[in-house]
Each structure stands twice: as structure tokens, then as C-alpha cells.
Amino acid sequence: MSSAASPSTAPKVHVTMTIDPQTHSFTTDALPPLLTLKITSSYTTPITFFTFNRPLSLPSALTNRTITIHCLPSLQKIETCSFRVNRPAITRVKGDSDESFYLTLYPNTTVEISTPFGRGGGVNKIRPVPKKIAEKGWEVDEDGKERRIRRSVQPTGVDGLEPGWEYKVGLDRESLEGMWWAAVEKEEILVEDGAEGRYVQDYGEWIKDGGVEWVVEEGIVKVEE
Image (cartoon, rainbow, N blue to C red; front, side, top):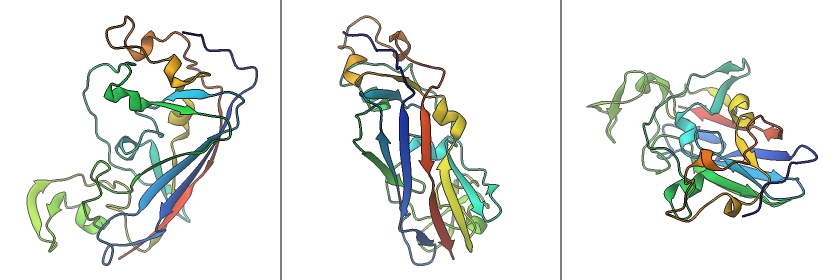
């Protein structure tokens, strides 16, 4: 296994965020719009990011506050839904489900990741509701009648937002800049099942103190009744 080279210049990564369709109506749209991140590195070699609990890990970024929402034009930050999940230590084993947390970007090659911009953990089946319904804290059925099942009163994507406004959707800068990365392909980081050093922290070449220049083009969504 080769070691990661120390970058001579800071990698630059461009992220473009789009929401399609750009207008969501709680009355006519049964499903949330699609949030897409287009990610492009202009660095000279492949680089790999460890994305767990970070903005580039979808759909979980919608429920750990690493995707941000601000109301326009005031730029008031919306306090979004936050879930904490207890789970075992993350591995770096080839073929394990945790492999999805290792994102390799190749020079000038765009990677797209998408998720429904609403509740449901990436499964586009839950109809979004406006703030006045969400803040009551109860699930509703297809006819809008309350079910005695608790739900978050805070927004997840368009679900729980107040209609009549435009919103800017971005990435939490501190979380983005705090991602571990290495100037190698993910195959250089992953190990076979049964090998020693099977956990993410066992890889010794992570760069943990930033060093990446991030350029983010934020998305816009308009929400209607």
C-alpha cells in the first residue's frame, strides 16, 4: 500500500448545489424536490474525503445540520432537525457498508450526489407539510388528519418550512472544512476484511487540519402554500 503524498498546493474543490424543481408547493406537490450536489476537484491527483457526519454524506446531512437553510432576504438561519444515531466505530473495510463514507474525487471530474430534499432518509415517500402543521409535532395522514405519532417540529429540507418565502440552501462551512482527507484514491485507504487496522482512524495519512479550498455555489428554493 502506498502512502499519501503531502500536497504541495492546497486542493480546490467546487460544489454546486441545485434543487429541482426550484419551487415547491405544499398543496400540489406530493413529494419533495431533489437536492443535488455537483462536486469537482481541480487538484492534480485523486483525493479522498471521509464524509461521515459531514455535508457530503447524503441524506444524513439533512438531519445533522450540516446542510444549512437561510430565509431570504433576511438571511435568518433556520434551525433544522437534528438526530443523533449511536452506532459502532466506522471501519475502512472493502465491501463494508461504511465504504460509502469514503469519497474519491478525480481531477476535473464531476461527481453528483442527490437526495430528496425532505423527510424520509432518502426514500422519497413522505409528503412535506408546512410549518403550521409540522410545529404541532404530530404525523398526519394523506387527508391531513393528525395521527398520534410524534414527529420533529423542526424542518427537514422543505418539510416544515414556512410558505411564501425563498430559502438559500448551503453547506455548514465549519463541518465542510473539518473533513479528513488524503491525497490518494480510496482503494489506498481501504483494507481487506480480517486485516489489522480495520477502523477509519487506523489509516495514518489523514490530513485533519483543513487545507482544502472550498468554493460553494448555494441553491435556492421557493416554498408556496
